Length: 96
Image (cartoon, rainbow, N blue to C red):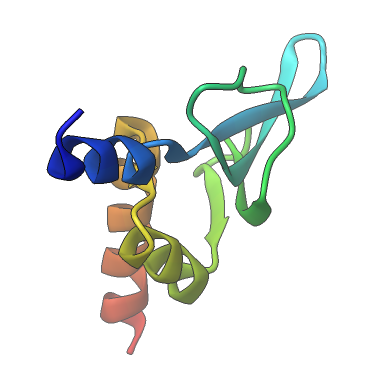
């Protein structure tokens, strides 16, 4: 395998994604960094925040500094997590 492809493959192994917690019919999510080859319920490297879709409006808490560090290291956020991060950035810039 070419060195560029091997490095790309290693970098894309880390994912920032949602991990479902909570009881049946009461979802609650943690935003975690984990190996993309593992199941979402498997082991994870670090918890970056939480997401509670049952609140009105939905409660989102993300440590953006840690998330940016992981992205610099090569982690790829899922589409949902990317949308949540954008929402948190927008809310934090509006409140400043």
